[in-house]
Length: 384
Image 1 (cartoon, rainbow, N blue to C red):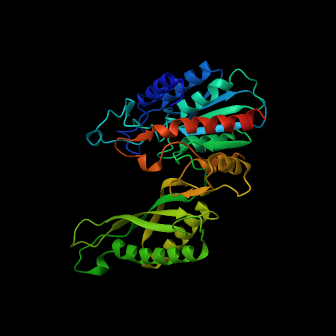
Image 2: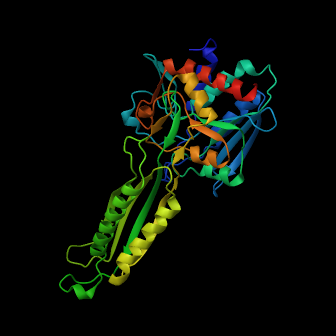
Image 3: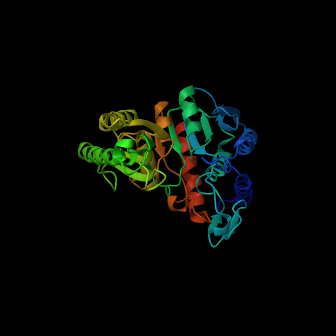
């Protein structure tokens, strides 16, 4: 732990105590305004200029852009303020209190990823007496765990902008150079019900879905033949059929059927293109059957992320950590920061296998190295 560990533990405890759950279930979803206000006050006390940006349409979700220094260039350190829901019965610790035990720090969001912000505060503290040649920008976003609306809003606004960005997701302090994209959609087929004794009395949506699934299998094979990246353990795009619902009785012709699926995209694939192709294929299958259909986006999606091998940020992180850039299976806000023109990587303390788990923790041996790396990156991008 750093020398001023008492203050760091206090800051970690303060962010853990604030409920900032985001969920597609409205009963579980909370506003993140309290954690945004807390971080804004904390960074303002360090001399940052803080701007709170509303995102979404209901006025409950917010981003924070905290800036120290001025001018072009500089470094963005980014993280999301939300956590996933939790099952109290599976936790042996209080999820909303920081608990230190057996070389670990426990708490909801300690690793994924509210704990990143106090580490930034600790890293920047000794540098505050110096003049920043280029700005340091801390970005705290909303709803990464659900819609990524916080990052989408910033991309639409075209800010913030800097030379480079680090997203502090838990990667074991190994720089991430690539991850797959993801989209989740639903195909809804609308036929006509009728008595099962006479197939002519209706239009069977379940039978039509069988034909749609066959077509999706064919499309999946084509994607796997066309796109391949050996950077990933699963080196091809995947299309998973996750849930199917339809009909209401075995003696009635099935009048409606829904199929939910996801696609994991490798670099070079585009979500709009994939959706358009799926739409065209479904229409080609169901139109001759007299079946209507909808293709509904359940999760707009996040594009695949890929940092160029010549990325100065990636090379710096590899040199600092001694680890070559890795690929990961989870999605991040990286593509949205890249859209803003920043040289972006994903790298932070903690391990992803702790994310979304009961008794989420960060190992203490990750803390000081994480602070050291952040301080060195700030020095490289804001002072040199």
